[in-house]
Length: 589
Image (cartoon, rainbow, N blue to C red; front, side, top):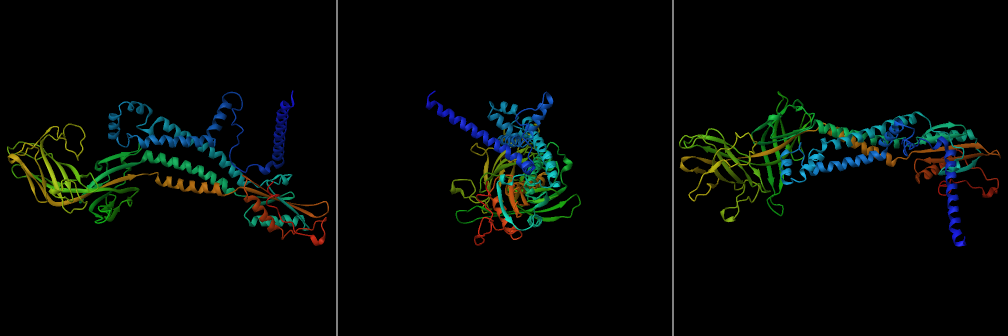
């Protein structure tokens, strides 16, 4: 073999020897520390993480349980739960809006069957999402319970005694003193207790420990995750949420039949609805009149009178955006508002067959609104024949005039209101058994009234004006009374308080686990061979930190007045100097 070939081989042998020496040194250090370095954390040991221990089913069960309750798996499951929630936010959900799901299926006929098989239209009740949720719940509980018992055992126990060789610890200092060893230990114990260390004397040394709140914070953080998961489950199972549009002067009672739309959790019961009612007295809205923000809303306030229970005393309340009415755990939010023009419809004989304020839905920021006016019963034409009427309505609160070239509103306030109606008669389809949108007019089974040009009879009405139907069929009048409406969301989320508690505990626990350091301090005082007391101080933390040597140095400086340094026998008296604890070389071995 040539020298060039032998050199790498010798280098490899030297690296192997160095590695083995480091391993031996590490094992020797761990042996010397003994119990002093143990139980600085409540994390479970990893002795079973490399594979199943034992033979047969029991060994595999123990290994699988250890994997499931490990922090790695808990974080992975938490990540999967977050990723699994994304489809529930992007894809229409059956429990939220069945109409949107049906529309999605019509527009995406290819991928909809795949989504259905994967449960993406009902993510939060799907098998795979429930499996992730339950596994995460079990993982957290299996991780927290043993750590909690171990932590309680540590709180009931005492700090372990000092290791045989304090010089192996990462923070270390020593000096000589003429004080008695017993006196030094008493002074050290008193000093450490004053610094809120748990302290007791073991043999020739004082053992002290501090920072238990770090592990408490870690456990609190994990418990808070369970609280949040429980709150999520309670909220999904027992929640209720519905919407209601109310015209000024009308009221609402919290029963299922009063809602325009309603959805709830799988374990919700109608008896769980809080008994209350309220009436919309008036609605106030103001808008910016000038500048670049012209037309922007400045104030939306719904003034209501509400009462709790069946015989509750009426109370006044102003509901604003993000300032809901809270009654017995239910919250009433203000969502939107619009206008409800009042119209009067008469038949061919002049009899009033309909009179009321009809809410129309806004289609732009200036509250240009569209909708339908429907007369179901009581109408007969000039010949006395029963019929139904329907009017396609378009309302603008501020009309720009005929020369403006557009029918859309120029401002959201009622500055120049007009109502455009188109007249139809026939069957409104209310007896078909199919659900209808009350704000849309289905003209499939209706015939339009014709104007002299043969087109659909339409007219733009000012307040007080009327549209006469042809052949004495009746009329429709746009009354001067224009009301406003407001839409509300009434929600009941029983898990919100629990979720808030979990979030606060999570922040507090995380702060404790990040900013509090678990550490141990030992002070050993023994009589040396020359009869002078030798004081040794050493510290050990759960993780390496520059704060531990600094704290040890501060403790040593505080203890020196009680145990002043003795002169070095090898030094001259004139050169006698106090030993200052090292914080860089001696304290950071």
